[in-house]
Image (cartoon, rainbow, N blue to C red; front, side, top):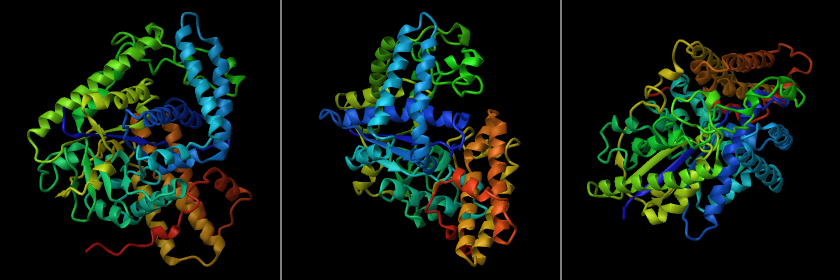
Length: 523
């Protein structure tokens, strides 16, 4: 039996995709994540927690923008009708896909029932799991701003962090101590800002620790602590590769559901338009399996749910056996209890890899017999073990391991725009305002600045998908920011403009413009 621990960590995030008009592509992103990821994950966690033979443990970051969406009553009211439209369209599943269609129908029905049962509010379910010790809920930067590229204006980084902490406490009832840094990205000095905002631990990719000063004695198999008092955990690639890799890992199994083939691409345009869907797009109605390697989409075979479930049991067992062997090797080489940290994007489980929540359920169920103890990051730190002092290296978990995915020919143009707006915000806040109305304008300007800094739009620009949407979002929020600053200085706003902006960008009600107050110069 292994002597050591496994910490599974999920990062749940979506950009703020609220729109006053139903049926948008961005709204589909959110509803598909609810349907395929967040509702199934909660079901799996609650079922495991109710079984006395299991001891499920999971650390999970809930980004402030995702929390804002989850708490939005207008969006919640739209989810039921959105599901109902897909239930109607599923009736047109082609012959030969009856088992796959029945599986999707069951998913839709369970989601509809669960949504009605909780009144469209998932946050109490997350809270109860945290109170039971099953979940350790982390925060993130307010709008998932890529912090190393905001560092030229440290007040912008601080505002991202303080807004996040405040929103987490408002919606979940407790101040977060852990944070999922956007893209696990770190730069020198960030730890001091994190600690000043009340945060105590975060995750980095392996080289963030391994290239630290001094090199950690235990590599990525124990947390380290910086001189500022911030603990960092390192990603274990051996524990993550078999789960996230579509080519070399479990999701590429030919019996699992194919992500890219969707009924929404096959239905006639008029069928979609009649139900408020303006064009062909993925609907979350996927009826095919991965099939053989390099099989083209037109040749994909029908999905067979029972065969996929057998594969999930096998892969859960294989994953745990690998972790047990790894812990046994480490136990013989370490004088402390080894820890494997396996961080993933939450939407891998259910959205990208449909069987992902079932896989987690198998890991929870089989872990005791495999001799693998599941822990949260907070559990590990609460044991009071001494941590090695180490200053981590600048790093990220993005392609290339550093910052180039968010700083390249496709998206570098936005960085001076962020910096110019951030410095203007610091200057305006430091000068102060003369009325409550001006203060409200300044707070809204802060919201627009945070929204413009979302790393999601830079990611999309680099990836080359929906780039017009990403560019429009950046320019929309920056344009609103500058209009609001001008209004504070007396430029009249168009009739109805402010009300429309407040209605559409109605997040972070406790935002405090004072978070952008000028910081003292670094020594």
